[in-house]
Structure formats: structure tokens, C-alpha cells
Length: 262
Ligand code: NI
Image (cartoon, rainbow, N blue to C red; front, side, top):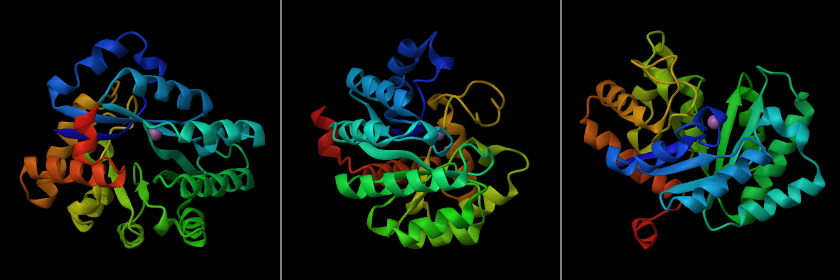
């Protein structure tokens, strides 16, 4: 069964069919989903979904471009959410210099604060990093992120840097981009990073893989990504599905016994 490590089912693009879609996941081979927070409101919405579905978990965190909304008061609220038993990670957090909003110093401040939060509550982090490779790596190094653990999601940088993140014990999140025709760089990353350090993700509703590129994405498209990874690595499709699910359970600290208890 496939483990979806990064989805945004709270997004308004799912308003029309959220219930039907989420209910159909187990019969379509998706047995675990982590709904990732991108703001305070989406963190709350994700936790509500996790309470509704046994196989949905949540990550609590504020995306770098949304950190302008953070202050000491609502950061206390975020810390409380992190203690919820179905919150498995702090995320998505990081740096995004593609959009210069808010200014870099504010993004950095809240990236560090959310890393500290993950350390405090002993849960992994989901890193979002876009056009900010050096600052992201430097902040992770300076804050001993290797002790916290987690994933660099929707990975978009070089193979060399991917292997540095792997050295820190981090996983590399692979989504629909690897199936795109111009994905040469991502194909090289997948070929070089051991399967034991890769995770399957959609980042839905965004970034649908080929052959559904441009349409609304959902976890039902994960087989296309797993198939592409299998081709690149020259292994069986089932091996990709099984190993990446094991990786995800290990990273999110959800062992089999815990899942069966649900
Ligand atoms: Ni995301």
C-alpha cells in the first residue's frame, strides 16, 4: 500500500468532493496520508481531517511565505497543536525566495523557531525550500537538524546537495515533477539517492504527474510517480511502494502496530 507523505486536502480545490475522494483512498491502494499545514488555518483544517479519518495524519506548521502571520501569541497556539496525537511532524517550514514575501529575515526567524519547536516536541520536520538552497542548508546545519530529522519535500536542487541532506539523515520527497519531460535533474537525483532515503508525495492539489499534468492532483496519481522511480532505479514497482512506505513510517514514527491500533 502507498504512503502519501505530503498532501493539502484542506485546499479549496477539494471542497466539492473531499469526502468522496478521501473515503476512496484505501480501496485505491493509498493506506496512509499526511496532510501538511501551510498556515495557521490550514494546520487547524488538517487536524480536523486527521480526526475524521483513521488513515489521515497531520503536520502542523507555517510555510515560509505565510510566516508574516506569525507572532508570539499564535506561535503558542501552534505549539499546542503540535502536541495533538495525530500530528506527526512540524511542517511545512523553510525558506522560499522565489516569492520575496515576507522579507528573508522574517522567513529565517520563523524557520529557526519552528525547527526549535520540532526539537522540543520530538517530531520530524517537513522542509519547503525554493531558490534558497544555501541559506536552508546553513540554517539546518547551524541548528543541528540532523538530530531532528525529516524530509526535504518537493526536492528541486542538485544531486550533490541531495546527498548532503541524506548525510544529515534526511529523506528526499519525490513528486510529480520527476515525470515531466524536462526533469533531467530530478531523474539524476532519484538515480543517485538510495531508495531507503526517498519518499513518495504529491503536494496535491498542485504538481500532478504526467499523464495528468496541469489537472488537479490527488494521491490517486502516486502510482505514476512510483512507476517512474522504479524505471529510473531499475527495480520493481512494488519494491518502490514498499520501501518508500517503510521510510515514511520510520520518519513519521508510525510503526505498523500503531497504525493497526487505529
Ligand atoms: Ni506542500
